Amino acid sequence: MDDLSIERESTYRVYSYLDKHTNSDYRIIFADGTQYIAKFEDAYDSDNENDGARDERDPNYYEYFNLAFRIIKVIKAGPHNWRDMINIDYRRFPSRVEDITNGVVVYPPSGAVAPN
Image 1 (tube, rainbow, N blue to C red):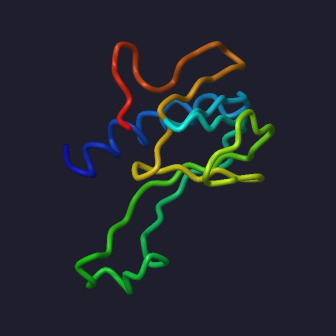
Image 2 (cartoon, one colour):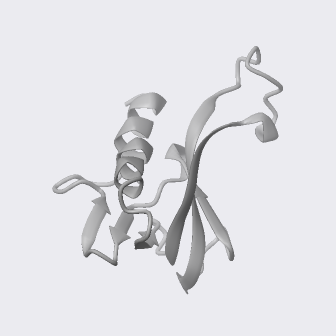
């Protein structure tokens, strides 16, 4: 599966739910066990300029869609050590996203296995 397909199946799928449920609290769980309770804050396009790609002419340059959450509570800290905000995109996507306000598993989709 290419990067754009992964992004469509993860980031965009979750965003389509978040956009309709902006007041919910979410449990965000990563494959390493890291867990947070968070509120959705924003969604935006980003790029990898900070990773060394200078501009869109650089062959290593790429854009991606980012979801930002404000952390309410750290359930289990992990290697990223996020304290205030979580920014997720297809490159570091959680294994599970739950709307704990409405009791809905947002990701992975029903019956699907989340990529690690």
